[in-house]
Image (cartoon, rainbow, N blue to C red):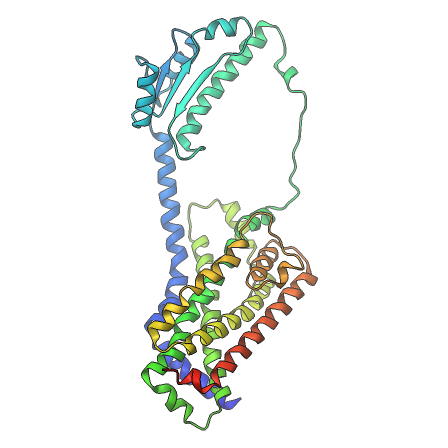
Length: 397
């Protein structure tokens, strides 16, 4: 045990001298989310304000019909109305972004309304977002006009408009706000720390195996009285700790990003911060430990097979895609923790984290996740140890 600690401390000091490791482990996960939240929220807010304050250029081809709609459009300060158009000209202007929208009424619109039939209007627009703010604003105008026609018709018939409301439904969502928010961001959180766990441990894994082989310092270390297994455990401990630290710091960075965002509603912010309970943090941290061990085992094994630093880097980079797939599956709607998903590496951590954050109490499934993750982590260590004792692996040229 003492030998392992000596090797660990030696490798740990060397790792902390590596600028790339420090950037990947501390700087990126700590600053990424505050910057991301700050920039994206301000850009989104500015775009929304611009879209809401922008004057809408709307074309209207009414054929002398629907004077009420025309008056409504002319009476709005946020609408610039263009009427002297043909249908083809209007469509062309919409495609060229000269018009935000085009309203085309049928020639007998007023007659239809007067004879208690349905009026017809074609609405043309160009938008990649079906629910863009400008589209919503124009739909609000049409909804207001539709409601005016409806009330006018009911008044003419001397009927109460409530007659068409045949069913009054009172909806009550019994899910707490914490559960609703956890469902939204619960899958995103494990996705973050899984990525940073593997990314943070990648550089020390490369440097402590392929890097030392390339520099010729591995032979010097093997010539010491320390057993190879002790040397491996020292290196393994460093890579595991760096991955664990990177994942933990990424969660801290996310917390700081949420905490320092002034545009988040206070009630929403309070609910998010309420998810960072001591019990939840401990349970999630315990999931990170076997995940970090698994990451270290895979990365060290691949790094030891490589001849050079660059070769190890080129082989480990595609590994991120393998990690992203199960982590991304945890974001899919309807994907929940079950006995079978609790056995799938990485995915089980993602789903268990989502359930823990939501406050779901399921100790049986959590036990399966911890057990299966622990078994996979031990197998990863054993697999790595098998490579480390082989001469053809250590001195591969």
